[in-house]
Image 1 (cartoon, protein in one colour):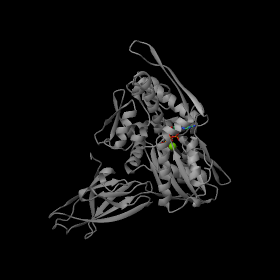
Image 2 (cartoon, rainbow, N blue to C red):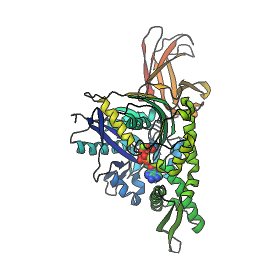
Image 3 (cartoon, rainbow, N blue to C red):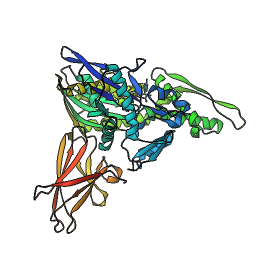
Length: 510
Ligand SMILES: Nc1ncnc2c1ncn2[C@@H]1O[C@H](COP(=O)(O)OP(=O)(O)OP(=O)(O)O)[C@@H](O)[C@H]1O
Ligand SMILES: [Mg+2]
């Protein structure tokens, strides 16, 4: 074990997992998942504060969730790096019991036991817990990690994960994409020459990547996804049905009762998982509420796999539509695909596998463990960054959605199209629009819409120190640099003098 280990962390929406390379077997690295006490390999990504003011993370937080729903935060990854005024935040607000508010930078803050937390602060708590577990297991302090994020995370969200690490003195050496990590778990040490589809449907996010593996080179051909599509949405579809059924039978709406909602949510998720193995599962919750006369009321339902499939068919359709788009983007057809790999707990749902089998004309492979592959891949990549490594990996990834700037009238001018390979740099030359202008402001967005308002604002960049001249005379040469992690930096220079200009960035209220 190196003195300064680098661990791999899968920071999941519902579960997080860490792994490390411990030795090798004839040149093939041996990866160990880091066990949590009790032998579990995953830690629930849940943060809570109990009535005594104690912070609880992981299983401790999950255990008291039903009784303390308002001060228990789950699914926080979905809100990472999001501006408060996005549709996604609004939808999320409607389904969680904790309070979601706008922060100072138009970001999201959560109140837990009357204390304010930013999203990177919540993620930092979870990262810290994983780091502690790893430090205990390895018996050395862990200060460096490779952390995975959904391929479909934008620049702001990636930055937020790095910030979370920084705040707890955990250096996030590299951010890599979850599906790419899963491909590493599958392909390292096998001398493959294959094109694989990684279909990753987790608790909160959906990603699909098409990756060409040539021994130690992992080249992403195209990626796509939806960071608002995952197991939580399958649960919500069930919950919606249960509430509607209960209201129809009793006239009572349980949505405003957080403790009842929590009990329903818990059982809905368990029932959903059971329905992956069984055709029919009873759904009973005694004493969920009382009538105005004080009579206790129960929920008594029967859930069939068929009903679950009907309630969630729209969600499954969306995953398949995305697979089709990514395939088109990659320029390949289904017959070029050697293996389809399932990652993420929600891929255990039989209909997901059936639909993929139909689409690709062959069943998905069982080449990787759906819950562990991402952490294993992160650990392999971490190992390749170790000073004394003999594992050389080459990851060629892409940006998941276009990056560009706002033009007059709010149109989006694309600088990097989606699926542009990274690292990547592009130059744009801008000119002044009025006499004696010495400053130029540019708003940068990321997304796939041709109107900036529908895309995510990455920042406002101000370039100052422009040579004073007539309008249109002075030029600014702006370089957009997207690094290997999909994070953007910008700088500008005066092309006539070659002098660098001062650049300030602000992520602001939009
Ligand atoms: N047997 C099963 N059948 C259906 N769904 C399941 C099953 N087992 C787990 N799930 C669902 O999988 C989801 C969790 O998956 P996973 O642990 O891969 O997510 P995650 O990595 O935390 O999230 P993400 O990758 O989206 O950030 C949960 O919604 C859970 O209900
Ligand atoms: Mg995951």
